[in-house]
Image (cartoon, rainbow, N blue to C red; front, side, top):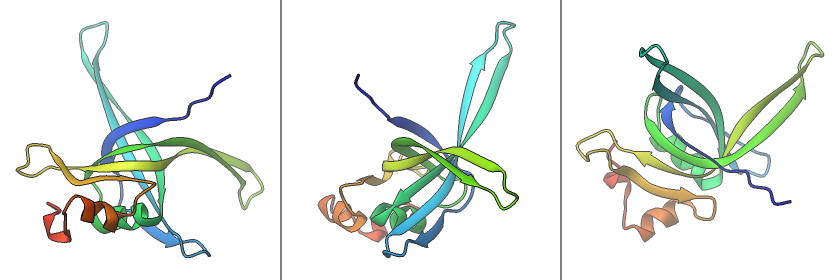
Length: 143
């Protein structure tokens, strides 16, 4: 049986990214994402809900997200769903799902009419390489 684990989200950061480094000196960034959903109920009333998602990115992606993103900024994230489980200090078992970012795109909110702000970044390219390929410099990022 074939397996497929892919998620796509567009949302806004719920907090500033938190950058740290593994013992191997690989960068890791964690951030929260809020994804809104609007629909009309059977009663004709407009309804909305928000899904809060924890995300994690590694390497050059982590450093780029940390450098350019802040709370409230929009981002498109493509990744996979992972399941983390651990034992808390009080001995209770805890678990949660988290998205591991495989690629992302900054979404502009300025005069660009919603165009992507910083280009696409995926797990197979580091941010500086992606910027060089697209002819971008730090001054080209619109925020």
